[in-house]
Image (cartoon, rainbow, N blue to C red; front, side, top):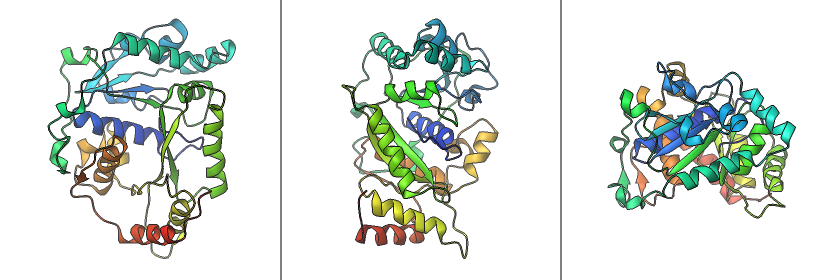
Amino acid sequence: MVNNRKGGVGKTSLTEQLAAILAALGFNVAVVDGDDQANATALALPRRDFPATLTDVIVKGAPLIAAMRQVRRHLWIVPADEELKQAASWIDSKQDFDIVSDRIADLREALPPPPPRDRLLWWYKPTINIGAFQLEETTDEEFVTPPPYLDFLFFDSPPQENDLTISMIYASDKILVPVEMDAFSIDGLARLLNSIIKRFRHRERKVQIVGILPNKILHKPGNQVPMDFLESVWKHFPLLARRPIHHDDAIPISQAYHKVALEINRDSRATRELCALALELIGYEGDMAGVPICDICDAAVERAQKAAKPV
């Protein structure tokens, strides 16, 4: 799950992009769209054939697998709808914050485990270039074909936290926390991380925070604020900080056309940075070729590493 209680930090776009990138590498990936704005669901357009939505999964008990549609090869969506607030209200009325965990447990029983990753020809290569990422449209028959197994499942949450978001957090194994570099404090970020961890203090299964992601970095002459914040993140959270994703028109343009960045501009800085991030998150031990180096960001990270003070 890509999670932050603050809106506008890029949760939905990061969820869509990372899921699509992993699908482009040959993994089977699903996205559960928990946002009634249905941005992730829009990847299915112009198709609108959804036998069930996330609302049906929560309120009516429809199986997750029955709601999945393959919007790109290897990429399935569990769609949102305009009634999604009913799902949050249902969770609140029942105080059943484990409902999403229960639906995931049912999904695990319905699907076999994924085969080993060495089925992917690139997995043991020392370097991957952008040509390895192949995202393809689906035929009408493929669109309605359920996944034979899943390697990854992502939750997309609404801009503001609600009871459905909390249920998704409890169902998550790993959480990536995106932050913008112009509107946060280190104390606020520490409180956010602590609040996620505290949710699991009485639970047998714990969640892993897999990184703090500085997102939408934009360099402007005379504005040192983003780099000061970037330096602070790396200084105070050296074990969690990730290399930043730069602001890039490929991201909003792709969303405007209900696509992902790989389909708009494979050579853009952010597209390649996101590809590198996806590879890091899944434990690939090689390198992503062709990722531009930002000397300004590197200098900020280097300064922080010399003066690291973990919170």
